[in-house]
Length: 164
Image 1 (tube, rainbow, N blue to C red):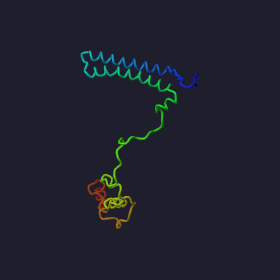
Image 2 (tube, rainbow, N blue to C red):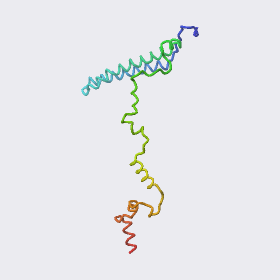
Image 3 (cartoon, helix red, strand yellow):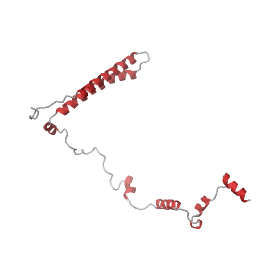
Image 4 (tube, rainbow, N blue to C red):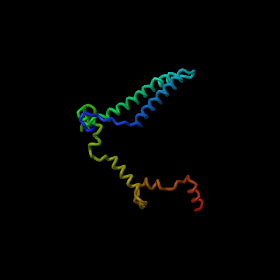
């Protein structure tokens, strides 16, 4: 009888049913607790909001379980007919933003392959800094100045005193 067309089989999943029932009861218990907090001397409107919100969560648990059972028991031909379970569909126009036009200034810098002279100079400077121990004559005056010992450090003062 299970393979007859039009016959739906229902699987009984006690663990899922117990989970849905326990989840709904916990949500209703939380609603009761929040209602008691609201009625206490220190209760606020936030507690009232939660007391009204938890029953909605309980209903959502029961609805989700029911929806799971219905979708699981729906025969395959009906899923195809209703469109459930079909593959990806075309995205409707207007959902995604339009691609930028080539003349758009926000992407103009990315569209051109013209080298930036400042960027090229900076990259040359970084390459110069990255080169291992060059001869002092080959280095620029600014680089030579930066490698001179700092006279304010204690090590430099100690070396000067030893040299005298």
